[in-house]
Length: 165
Image (tube, rainbow, N blue to C red; front, top):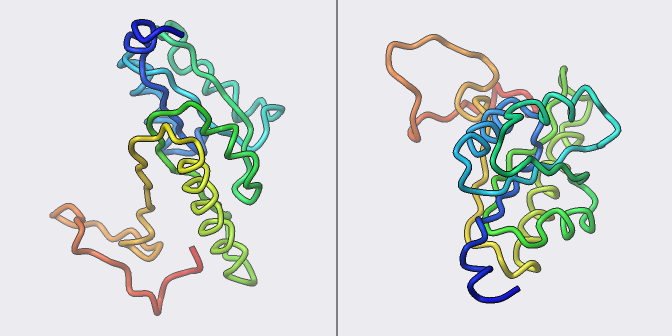
């Protein structure tokens, strides 16, 4: 690719855990904007209930969504997922429907998965910025309490009453 072609090529953005709640909205907004190419990760491309809705988000997107498989605990899967990306939004994290018997069933894949994504970003040598999202659980402890004022960076959950997530 010539320098001219490279300069006119839109940035490549990776959204991990693309079928998650926050990630789906992020993917949609990036596609609607039409200024970047979007690649999203899912656990399995065979799971139509997760991948099909993503592909229908913005059917007339300037650059069609690309989906790839990646597993939080499979370091190699992130090397391919991140390859050629300029920016990464890391939203993937396990979210069980109920508290596990052992909190490490959630903590280990969340921490190791984030490290695997970050290592892949370094190895790619193209990533300019990584954004790591969190969850409302970090400030609410899993209990949503209606408030008059928005939560902000000074609000943190009381760890002694938080579920494992």
